[in-house]
Amino acid sequence: MNFYELIIAPFAEFDFMRYALASICCLAFSAAPVGVFLVMRRMSLVGDALSHAVLPGAAIGYMFAGLSMPAMSVGGFVAGLLMALLAGLVSRFTTLKEDANFAAFYLSSLAVGVILVSKNGDSVDLLHLLFGSVLAVDVPALLMIAAAASVTMIILAVIYRPLVLESIDPLFLKAVGGKGGFWHVLFLVLVVMNLVAGFQALGTLMSVGLMMLPAITARLWAKSLGMLIMLSVALALLCGFAGLLFSYHVEIPSGPAIILCCGVLYLLSVVFGWEGGVLTKWLRHKKHRMI
Image 1 (cartoon, rainbow, N blue to C red):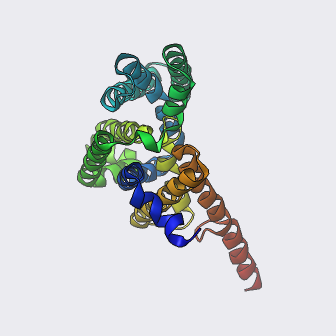
Image 2 (cartoon, rainbow, N blue to C red):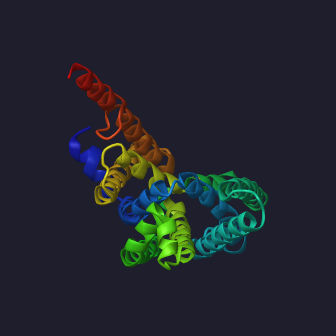
């Protein structure tokens, strides 16, 4: 198999591969920066919880309209926001922390979603919702993903400064009259929006992977926020491209293939990462001892 057949041909010959690649590019530019802010705010597992919360809403949309992207997206978006709101309310009126409530709600949501799909569909539909498929990304789905990505990037550009300040020093923002709670809620809306946009290609269980793994990996190579965002986008693009090719040639779902590529890069970065990798820290420690 030559270079053209291995790398170029799948995208040159098949529309669904081009649509899938375009959708991954859109998600890389929107979901990866959101993931960077989740890492900064120590909310990495909140993204995972919200991705599970999307499932029952998507399942209800599927029950009413079948494999309809608009119906499942609206259902998933409403379900994700509802879980975020409920977790916040329970945290406010009880002694439980927000992360504990997210864990409780997302486990319940996942169970409800799986039951709904299992009772009203078949195993193929369940696998499609959980793990995604490149075949599912058609023109309407691509337009919806592109719209969500565009809105996310515009909002992130507008709220960048208060969001950074609220992530680094929320007490100072509160002291100067900043609306920290408002920025927090708006940020959670962006998280849910990107998870919903990604589930068609990556599945509800895997969409959070493209959001979090590139951001976590980038942290092992860079320190400044600007570099973190740019590197996370680049890593998401690379893993998306490689994962789509891997899923095409090996004939496996696209979502797990893309996230597997992200996981491999993360493991390599754990060892070789310039800003925290095991090998780099060992070499620096050895150099300091010699000095």
